Length: 126
Image (cartoon, rainbow, N blue to C red; front, side, top):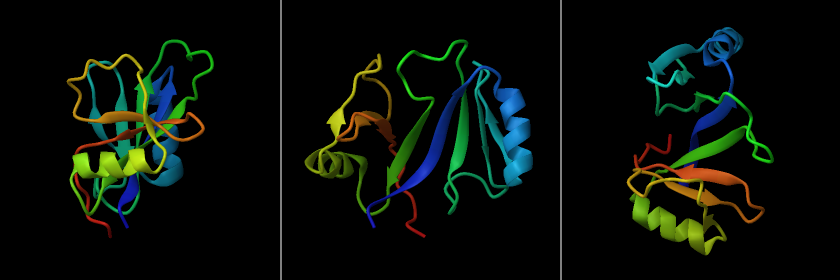
């Protein structure tokens, strides 16, 4: 196993409302709050366990033609650079969504153009 889903990111207008909903549905708790109003919810044991967390990312208006959900993955058996190389060989390609280049993650697109992020942390494969 080389990668597993660590986070799901959902663009939404009101992260607080969705956090209450999904926390009740999934028996999750709020794990983190960002200054922009975004929230991370997940299992009580926190990030990095067998279940992915959900980032509720504040968006005042849905972006036209852009899905509201994307996947974040973390390498489990190699560092981020090696995993990036592997993903590119599998058909992923870099995606520009306005990042500065200073982010600790890589934004990629799968072969059909669906965006996802390769994060820096290496996770236990469980």
